[in-house]
Length: 429
Image (tube, rainbow, N blue to C red; front, side):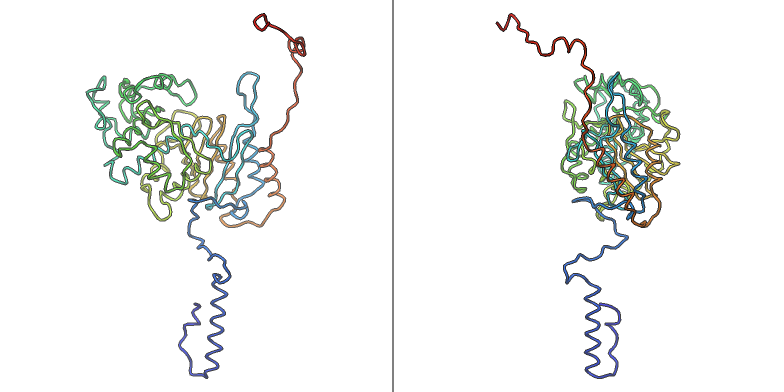
């Protein structure tokens, strides 16, 4: 009730008191719309939680420019060469941008469509990182500095030396384990192919020679993350998939999920997870909110702080890239991300309150994507409505999602010779 309704009654007549009470009651009804069935106004500082479903908004309502976001949608339509003489229609399968907890752009590029889980490739690694963090928070893992070999039978490992003994959980999380492995980010993943063909994936990794001391050098290695998945299983008694359903996917409202596993049933720690783009955005939104979800701390804030201040220098790809806890980062752009082959990406902009997701079919410059997104932000508060720009963006989204007929090429000479003729084989006579 408004403050004036709680005043001490003055020394006036009964009728004046009645008028005062009616006026106060009227003010209460106007200020509290529950009588008309409307929902109470949400506190502007309270996060919007998309556990059940995402809310949507116009870009301008969230301080973003629809015209600039139309350029971002165009970015995904770049033609890519799939094979000599074979060009695909677009580089992206989907694009999604969330600001202030609401989806402002959502585009699906033909032939991909909404409602289909997408392979997220090495974004799976970021999920493994998150599950490791949860196990640490739950005190199942005592420290990220715990030595890895303590979780496995040393007697079954081909060679145990001081360098292998020095591998820690943190070494695996930073891709600095020192285990010899060939899986360059822009070349042939020979070790990966050999690993997948082995009957025991964990043993294959632990038996690999050591190429350097742990912590000395970054070397991208999906074997590292598979060891983490095996450690999660040893700590929890569940596969990473089962643990994620209980501790991560369940709280976030993610229920349509599948995850490949090795011959022993251990969830593939390097890749093999399938999620919807909207569910990928939920993982990013958890990190955007410092590991909290609906008032509950799922991931320790210190874990996310380490991700956002990544310091491990990556193999040269793009200038300024750093690595930490299985996430990539551009510290100078104030953005970090989970990245998978062919640019499955969850990108987090803490300063801008943005999460962006792409799924796709080809690589592109991550810095360019980050710049396109950040340049579309014009204000921390709502902008005036822009009907022309809104229409441009809507048309772009509709255009990329619409299948278009293509003209048939010239009939090859051999096809022209045999077309329309009937041939009989002796076997059919």
